[in-house]
Image (cartoon, rainbow, N blue to C red):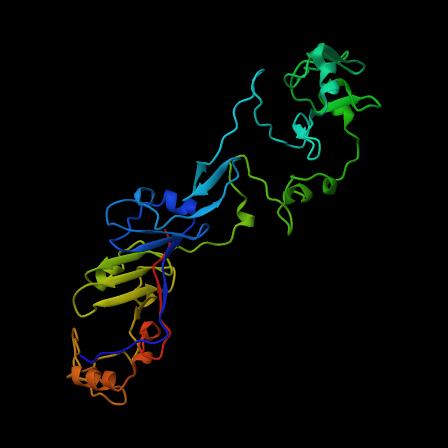
Length: 349
C-alpha cells in the first residue's frame, strides 16, 4: 500500500466549558488532552478518571474576587486575612454601595451606613387599613411582607353561575339572577341566532328545498325516495334450474356445469323464461397466451430477449464500476483525498 501524506491538517482538541466538563461522563484516554474553553486550561486523560478527578496541566494564577486571595487553578488561595473586628481589635471593613451597606470614604477612611434613620421609623409596628368599597387590615413592622385579606363591603350573594348581573357605576356587582323568557326580545330572526343549523330556515314538506317529516310508522314517504335496485348472484347446474330461481331484473346466475356453463344476467322481469336470461361473454381480444405459453405462466430472462434494456451481470457491473471515479459514489463526498484540508476534531466534553 502506498504511503500518502495529508496536507492542510488541523487538529482540534476535545473541548467544553467548565459546566459541560463537570457534567460530562466521558473518560479521556491515556494521553488525550481536553480543554476547558472558558478558562483555557488543559487536563490530560489517564484512561480511568473523569474530568473532575484529573489534575490540571500547569498552574493557572489569576485575580480572585475574594478579598485577600488569589485564584490558583480555579480555586481561591488565601494570601492574607484581616482579623475579625471586636471591641478591642480593629478588623477589616469592606466598602459597598447601596441601601443598608457600609461605605468607606477613600480619603478619610470614615465608614458610614445609609438609611439608618429611615429604618428606625419601622421600629414601631404600624397598622395598615383599607376602607370604602373593600375592607381589611394588617400589622407591618418591616420584617416581612404584608398580605391583607379584603372583603367587598355590603355584598352577600350565594356562590354560583348566573346569566344576568347588575353592577353599580364602580363596576361592583350589586345583584345576580338567571335570565328568564321575559328578558328575551320578541321578533328575533333566525339569522341572528347562532347554532341552530341550516334546517331551522327550511319549511317542512316534500318539495324541493323542504325538510321531509317521518310518518307515524317512523319512515319517510316513498315519494321522496328513489327506486332501488339490488343485484343478487345465484348458481345453478343447468338452465332448467336457473329458470326456477326467484330473481329480479339485473340478478346474475352462474351455471357451473354442462353445455350451458357460463354467467347469465336477467334482462326482464320474468325469470321463468329462458329468453329473458342473457349470457355474459368475455371480449374477443382476451389474452390467450404469454410469450407462447398458456396456463400459469412464469417467465425468466432466458424467455425474453434483452432489446435496448440489458440484463444485469457481474461482469457488466464490474466493468461499469471500474470506470467510475470515487466522487461518483453515494458517499463520495466523505472520501478524504490528498488535496483536501483535514480537520481532526476530537469533539466536546
